[in-house]
Length: 305
Figure 1 (tube, rainbow, N blue to C red):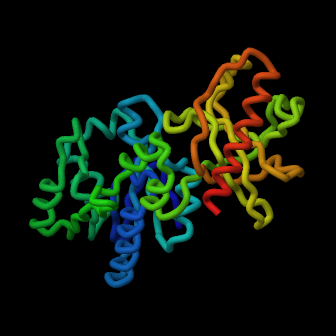
Figure 2: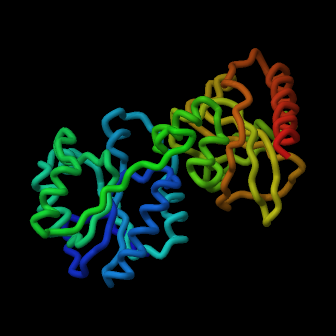
């Protein structure tokens, strides 16, 4: 899979069968679209492509991060498919100010050479999101490209969407979130050196630096695989008010494990939220709560077994 991040000076000669969207989370609905694009490309002997945005338009406007997947993990998952291209459009003032007409004619037709396009039925584009599937259908009728409008999939009579998955995560409903994603909800990153406070008080941690994310803040039951063996644990995600922490961080205490993980990248499944972040009066109160967190986490894992 070839990754294209800058399209200013690019013009693809080979026609594309493609889909455009945010694709945050790469949930089950997205997965169906990707498979359809790949199958259609094989039949039409075109190149398959997924076209997405960085940052996501909603994040660009809200200035708050609520991504379900980092770009690194999105690429990692997409590498398992046989896509020819992943095109990441930089969402900035220039792109957001394009008229729907320019977005279609300059981007979709001229630069990307899209022959067949699949989008969701709620896809919006162009300045002030004035472009919609109706605009795309008009160009399709004129023979510029074929188009498929993909309807949303449902779970429990609710449309599967990235927004619904985020809502499930905030409500601590990781079971539904995982069903919609088609896999466990994970946090991924490279293990880095922390401040060693966990080791000093008897709870060594594996630490990942994360972009602040409003979806996760508190203490969670987590699990991970190390050398193909599953380990459970607890993780503090967010800031550390007891130590006046200014960095948003993921700190996981992994049960029954001792070893060097530094510099290696791991996936951590978020199983359940245990409690909110709390500022403690001192080390002893913190240790008391950590022991309670561990006990609650083990009860969660026992219940899930």
